[in-house]
Image (tube, rainbow, N blue to C red):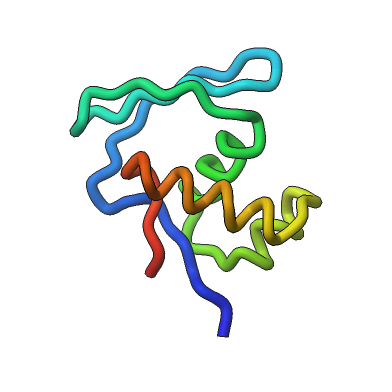
Length: 83
């Protein structure tokens, strides 16, 4: 069974997107993060609901291991979580 991912339940995010990179502010931690285009696109997809790694990879035409690694990094920042 595929592991599902969603935005972290405490995520209160504000972001901007320019030329292939995202800047995201996490209100709870008051941290601002500069993200790659892939990481930002993953966050945007997760704002629309819970998804599996396979579904995310298919929607972004990306390799599943890369999506998995990127989600793990976003989880480390407190932006997404497994469910």
